[in-house]
Length: 444
Image (cartoon, rainbow, N blue to C red; front, side, top):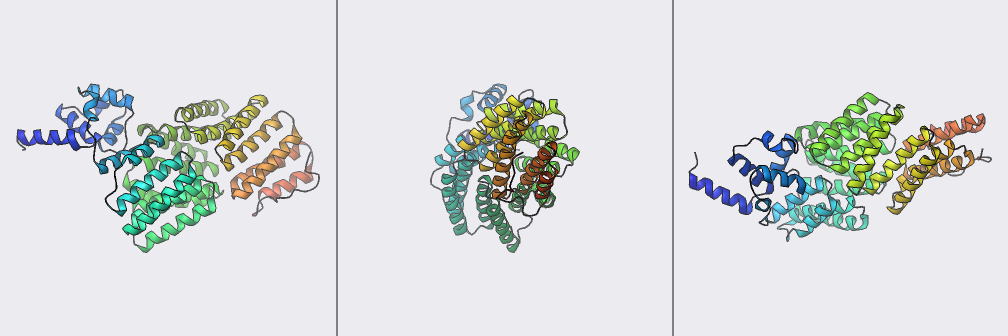
């Protein structure tokens, strides 16, 4: 058993140099409190555990509650500045919560890194935060530096992490073929180093699966997710497990396996709620709303989509707001509210254009076509469907190409134009997608 003097020295060290999580744990244990008692009513036990292990950073409101229960002033947990390594951990915790502005400031505040690996880690975090803010050119500059520093360090996992971030930047910019190439090369390098059972390998597999979902190949995506789960489940990182469950849910939805999709999405929602990640929780709620919409459960879809829109606004997620507006437009068109559908689609298109999201602009055009169809404006609807199909084709988003061409085929059938309908149904299932020039007499 340690002496009282030793324990006192430890307490002083905790106050002066320990992480926030270590300080909370030390005070909690000194008061004989359990994690359950500290968490009660304010957050989950799992969240307290992650805070104490510095895996997440609590919001200021939550931290005030915890400090009050621990019988300590809030300033005691923040009054001394940590060293560079602790600042880095703090910044990375903010990044996992998608608190991008705070994370970027925290990475910038890290003093000069000690070596190439630390420099790569800092540039990597700053680049990821900038990508989250859609400041893509600045993100690319930081990530390029991270790639170069990682190569100098010679650490294969750091090299893989930098490549993973660069590939995900291409994914965010809707450059799916480029992202696929980057992920596959990084996987090959890890395999060559004998590191195919590492967490870095699992993250690369999961991101490659996301690419295949966007390319309209959910069956192949599920294979990558299955392999990724072998390492990510073992790592027990709630953030990346939540992302994995979310992506598996989306893939199952694209496969029309709705019960499996809902099960995976609900697991993701639980993990993101524990993690206090409002942005990702909003993303899951949107996908659950889309799932309900596909099944015709309009009331449930509306509830989830409205929650998603609120969470996206709360977290400053313009991309998520645009995506949710697109789904609300589809919902309102399905429910016969043509005016509301058109307004939501136009708002989505305006926002997506402002943030330069080509894929969401195309989805907004398809949703606007749904709204115009609901209003009986068939000519205008056909034009918008065709514009969306061309945009999706250029992005290589096969799944969206199929959906839009299918909808256009149904539009022609409704107008009793079987030849035109047959043409578009054929395009929906043609391997090359729709042509970029359209047959004569395209307008109903």
